[in-house]
Length: 127
Ligand SMILES: [Cu+2]
Image (tube, rainbow, N blue to C red):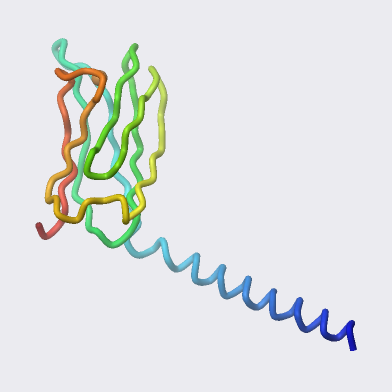
């Protein structure tokens, strides 16, 4: 009696796990978004190069690379992002949907360490 209960429970667990895996595999297909930014220097000016357009259907992945010899900040106030990227470092930042301010049509991507460091933007589709 106890043994068959244990077996039944384990089988149900396997079924749930399988279902969860199927759902999980299907989810990222909708609204998976990735945008790349690179800190570069052009004519003596530091620039966050990159950007793109997002929809607000899923989490956002930011691939951020600092090719320069000094640390640079990477901040997006309207997405609750504030990081420091070390020289030569490449960082992947995932922004959950709930951290993205839906009232904004253009998100400013800037360096919080250097006011003169030129910012980039992320646009929102359909806004
Ligand atoms: Cu900077």
